[in-house]
Image (cartoon, rainbow, N blue to C red; front, side):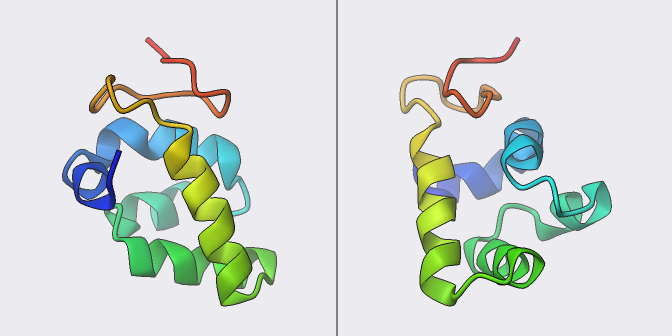
Length: 82
């Protein structure tokens, strides 16, 4: 799953993002609209990560989304959530 797909279907991914990055508020998550740079900045600030650490955790989350389940929300385990 690439960032362009995530951004275009952001509302489908907010639940799994919220599970992984629970220190961000619901309104913050929804306002970010899946924009990679903005997500990285918020994760970095909320968790006091370096930019590299924020990117690492975002990529781990992104990689947990199965490529063959486009737009289907997933849990942090990577299993589809229906």
